[in-house]
Length: 208
Image 1: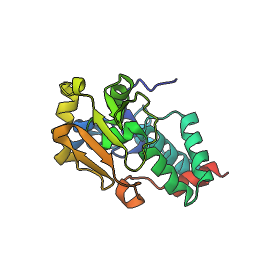
Image 2 (image 1 turned 180 degrees about the vertical axis):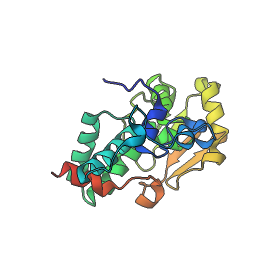
Image 3 (image 1 turned 90 degrees about the vertical axis):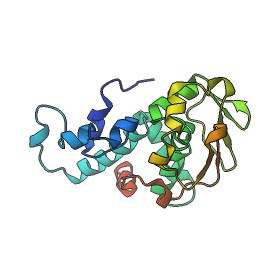
Image 4 (image 1 turned 60 degrees about the vertical axis):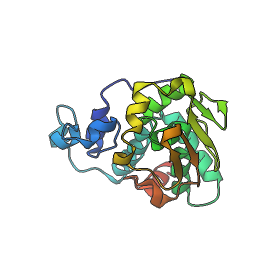
């Protein structure tokens, strides 16, 4: 699968918005968006006004890159959202939020989604008591996600848990940090996501 290997801060600068891809650094004055509030590249400071299509495209790219997905994956989630009941844009975001790598990140067991994917792929988590190494697994209400006993001394996990209060927890998860486990209590509502995204623009883009 294709992977983005360049600097993550370039993504945020391209969207002129914090996407919190670097973890703790995004909350400090070292954040690249704070230091250079213009897109990267030679012509970053001189780019003109976007067309309607350009605005829709940027909204889709911002969402896709926030969750670390390639275009094919993202489009498949959109198609699935179209098949389900409810507003397509909101259902799309709900599906993305239910991915296991996002759940691990939201519960505070990883500083960002990229680290969460790596930890899951290396087999450091259980879901409902069973080892699971699939970052794209869609978590359901009642699922229990926990760090394996043998993995609880990993510095990155312990450090991330120590910063849970600073980052805050979404309303749709419950976390017992002392026991390295969390539970999905609800399907996330749009108000719970706190995403700087206009999902209707994504729907309009794919509906053309």
